[in-house]
Image: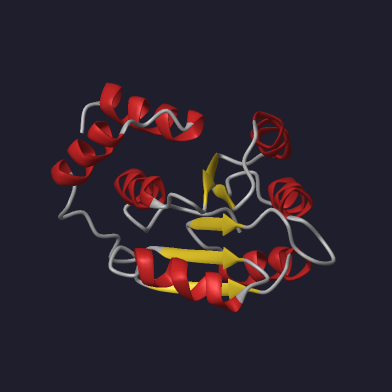
Length: 163
């Protein structure tokens, strides 16, 4: 994929400006992309939501790690070193922005996507300030599939992680 298209795809996902037509075009072009060695960590206090996300992107990912809240996220990230983190915003004990800051402090190379039912410009800005790489609303998870595909193309599920 040319660098321009990869950059455009990521910018669109970060700004949530991907039109339905553009998503369909990207999905058709990349429908065979699968992250054979990609590990994704899902952080959400709802087991039902974790199952839903796993089901929605399960054909694109080889391994899932799950956490029930933000407090577990840092230790779980350190132990498993996933390629991508899908982080809920509103959780008990520690919210997703706090957990994102903690992970990014110790692991600046971490790729974290906030996946939340809440959506506003203020929340998107707060997620960016916390270090999140993207913000996706749970009402429309289609951009999540494209973000996983984009991540797979970038890292091929085997990028080097600092020890």
